[in-house]
Length: 167
Image 1 (cartoon, one colour):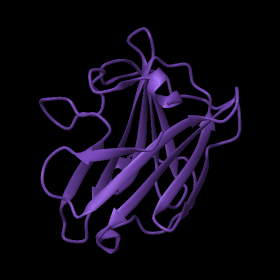
Image 2 (image 1 turned 180 degrees about the vertical axis):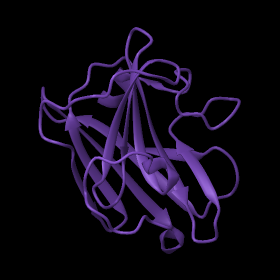
Image 3 (image 1 turned 90 degrees about the horizontal axis):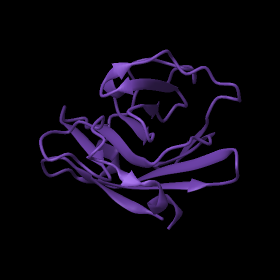
Image 4 (image 1 turned 135 degrees about the vertical axis):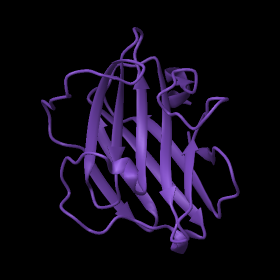
């Protein structure tokens, strides 16, 4: 189901809609679609589409998948196909890196919409998030669900149940 991501604070001239779906037993699909003053978005300069750290320092799209125990996985993507996957043993506690046993994510960006395919993950809750940098220098932190205190996407309380991805 397509849902609107909201900025944590401020008035942003951009709207973002996100969607998570299960394609088959092995693949999940995500999409993020921007509307509004999209010409004001400052996208990263084109670079190689590869695994890359610190994508969140620029405009990027993210997904958090929380497991039944304290662990969770964070995926980051940008419009040029760069990506990263982090594994955490607890709140902001890095665990050994995720080694993919399948092909890297499939990422397509066209007409202000990014479509992503990743391997199926076992999770109980999730959040789709985005960091949008504008040409004006402003930054906005979008999410399906925000914590009450700050724009911290790592907080489990700021997530939706897996069943909501199926609606």
